[in-house]
Length: 378
Image (cartoon, rainbow, N blue to C red; front, side, top):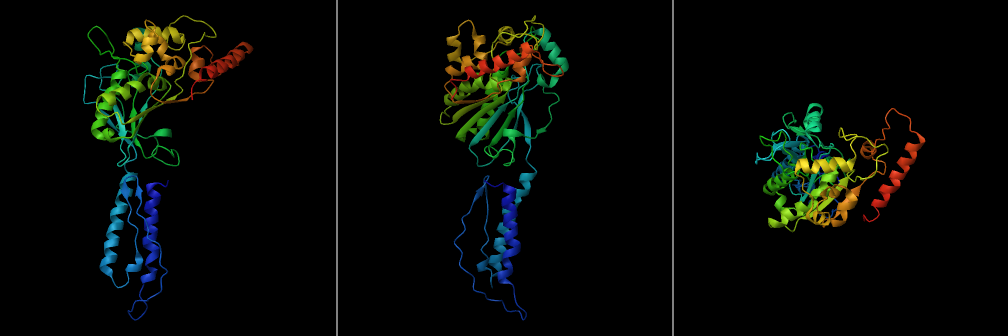
């Protein structure tokens, strides 16, 4: 599939080169030349914009017809220039201002619409979490953009699967793009507002719900496919929310939308750490202990089918190999066997330090263990 810019250049090239067949010879008489009949050219649709191929065999002696085609050319080129000026996603704050970031500032999303496309890509940003007052206060001081929207830029440029360039993103470049910034610190699971008794709101799950509600007014109601994607904590957020999004659309009368998930680097293990340490901060706290504390602090929600399978121990649903078998929606999993975040919470720090034999054996065993948990993933 060619980009719209390439198609625009092609139309311009036809305009410049083809009129040679209709040039006048000295003396003012048109040069009549036998032109080989060409098969009719089919009109193409490029990202929702119609092109207008020019038929120069009809130009001779008919300037009015020629000018009509020039006008059509100009109209078809206009969206090309507009497209180049509108590549970035634009920030929209949620209309429902009761759904907020950790500090009570407005939650929102970035969107780049693709007119004519019935595919929607919603991407959940990642960025760890906090699980009690102490770790959240520390996070607010050092990573405030992940807890507040007060300094979000008005636009974002998509990269990777969010890129509008077909060379970088050949499969999804012309989909409707929605980037949802992570500002809830709850692995996209919380449903707890900020109150006078609590210093922070944890509303990750509700942010996703409200974004979907707003997108239904922007064309999602006519979608064929919705891909809920995310990386790291956003990837875990996909596993926790993909079924809920499908159920939300179905309950609103849009059950025909095919909801799919893409979890990138969000498949974590509740394994034993290389060195067991006290749960003093997010980095050193064992994954199971951090999530056990966090789910209570956040008022975290998990998929209903997984909750029923782990009554009283819902923290299990934050780990991919436990929640995946309970999901109804198709989910594609992308996971490196030696994920840096997994190694970090297991107290294996590779940056600037030599790896000892015991650490090397631990890393090898971790890769084998993670691979075994992916055995039942198609």
